[in-house]
Length: 46
Image (cartoon, rainbow, N blue to C red; front, top):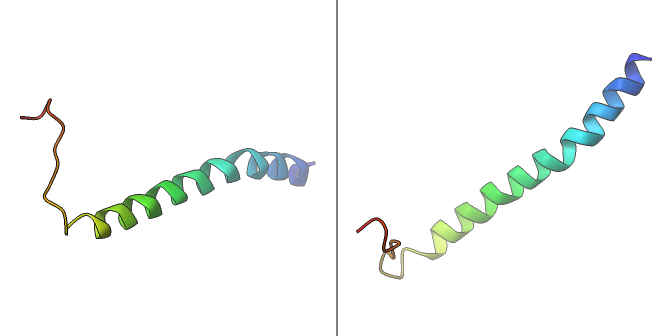
């Protein structure tokens, strides 16, 4: 019974964790490729 609950929880959480990791990796890649360009800040910050 516990293993079923565990599998259900993993099945629900795994996609969220994967999505979170993918976002973090893509953010790091974006940060590495950006320094060549001047920093662009949204107009709301200025």
